[in-house]
Each structure stands twice: as C-alpha cells, then as structure tokens.
Image (cartoon, rainbow, N blue to C red; front, side, top):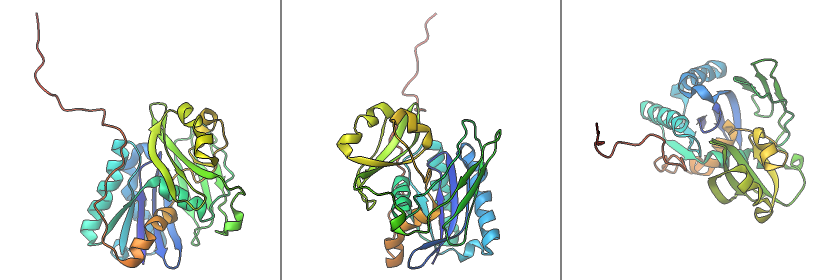
Length: 273
C-alpha cells in the first residue's frame, strides 16, 4: 500500500511517500522550513513523486498530522490532504503529530547527531529508500545538520524505563507537549504550557527522555533528542492498524489547543466626539 504522509504542525513541513508493508518504509521524503507552509507543501509532493518514479494516482491513502500546531500551519496541511484525497478518491487519516514523533522514537529512530543554528531558515531532507538515514543541510549562515537514524533495532533505544515527553514550538513562549510510556502509548496530552511549568512536572510525569524541538532544551533544563518533527514513517505507523484493516477514517479534527487570534466583530462600536 502506497501512502502519502503530510504534516504542517511544526516549524518543519514534512511530506513523504511510504510503502506500508509489514512496517512502513519511506520511499521518498522532503522537509522544509514551516514558515512557508502554503508555498512549499505541494511542490514537495510533486518532487516526491518524481524522486520515487510514481504518480499521485498510485497513492492508496493519505495520512496527515492533525497537530497540535498553530492555526495557519495546520489549516494548510489538513486542507491540502482533504483536497488531494477528494481528487484521488482515497481515504485521508488524521493522526496526532506528537504521536507520530513518539512512534518514530519507539520504532528505533533514536540516534540523532545534530548541529542546530539559531538562525536556520531552510531545511532540505533526503531519506534513504529504507527509511533509516537522513542527511539534512540547513542554510542561513553556515547552518548544517547531519542526522543518522538507527536501523530500527529496538536495542538502539536509550536505556531506561522512564516515560517519553514530546515537545514542539507553540510560539508565545509556550510549548505543545504530550507524554508517552516507553512503548509510545500516550499517557496525557496534548496540551500547551510555558516551558517552566512543564519542567516543574517532569518528575510527576516520570520523564526520562525528551523528544522534539531542541530550542527548548534550555528552558526545560534537559537534553532533547530527535526526531524534531514528525517523520513520514512515524505518521503512517500511527495509522498503520487502520490502514491495514481498511477502516474508514473519521473526519480530521485539527488540534489547535488555542482559540484563533482573529475574532469576528460582535457589534458596532460607539464613536464619541
């Protein structure tokens, strides 16, 4: 089964073509800076098809990250997935983007050697056909990230029986987060809080590993490992049981976790001289 995976919930726009056999295998993938979701997503999808030598008509299903994430970013990804699903006549499955990151970590993609810059603005990512290695080049003034993913052997996973915390940028000096057990089953969340509030709850949540945006390592007072954004295989892995069973997906509900900044006017304002 060929699955198109999309996610625009984080600062990275992710798109990938995944062959769903016994386990998801990434055939081609792209990741770009998320500040231009609308400009980058569909060109990335077309590039995937060219790289894999496949057409969109070969796609059997679509999986899209439903957040949590900012309103504009989520809207781009979910609307694009819905439009493609309608045009191709294929089901569209929505999954929690944090679940996808936890799944990728649990599946064995746990080794990540990364040099992050403060001003990196663009990321181009190529996954191998086996979905086991990522070489990523960041631009913007000598920014570069070389990332090696493990082969998928659970033995590569860091030792420890504690729980997993996934964090992504919620802007406004806050983070989106969710907590998982070592098998990537969600325990609580997703939620949105200031990093200091979340840091104070680490012992309560029995967290031993934090996955996600490394920019929050300082505010959270801990090391943060990869993946820093949902991966195509992680997205498809979360939906794999439903895809294999041929279950009809529920409507995709975006996880905004916040009310939008813009609100409709409630009435006329009185003007006084």
